Length: 329
Ligand code: FE
Image (tube, rainbow, N blue to C red; front, side, top):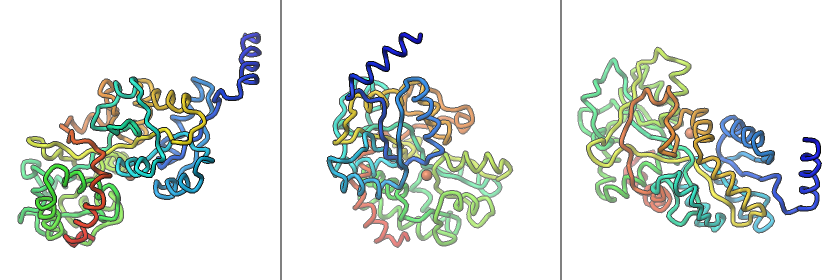
């Protein structure tokens, strides 16, 4: 054993190019990724350095650093942001057969520059004391007159809503989507909230009866307040399916540890890492061979929108303009 350790130390010493360390710029919060990084280091010996910030500042930082950037991997919590990093030429194509096999095609870049690692569903939440699930059907139907003064939404400034509307544009077209968003605005019971948890608290307190939220916030909130009268509803099951987004990552254009960076992404998409990555935040695995966490599985299965999530980026500007025209603050 000591002999092998001595041998491997020698190997590191004579092979300075061997990546015993990779650097990740991550918009995924530290408490959600640190356990994953630690597990990888434990099983491979490869150290992971990381900094966390919002995607915008991380992208700006990589642009400013240029070829000197220490980042090997960029990790984001929205497909539109991954698309943006790729547009800025910050990510390099990684045509890995493993990543392609483990990740469904609508949840990764068609040009292999970024890959979904967990699925985040943005769906309807309702107050069980005020609403029966049979009254709900689609995102669009939340604009019906019967929901007048009964709807709560988070601000349109949040990228999750920009992505939701961008994907609706991809599915329904601009005109139809604008009608839907305008009808939502007319049905708001109170001004928009700054986060999903506030939306759910308002629904639970009866300030409104329905809202649209990411399911992991529901999971986190209900773990603390199991008594809240809130249930998730899966809309559009007879047509396009539930809007999904991803948290994901790509290898940077200026990486000096490309092989190690690819190996890490491949590991993240594997059965071994998928639950670890998704479970800590009540998300869904991207790898269809991995079952969701039991607490998440309890919310039921649903059909998801199969249009490529790159549309969240491609149609982002259209979505922002549309929401502005519709008066969605
Ligand atoms: Fe979030």
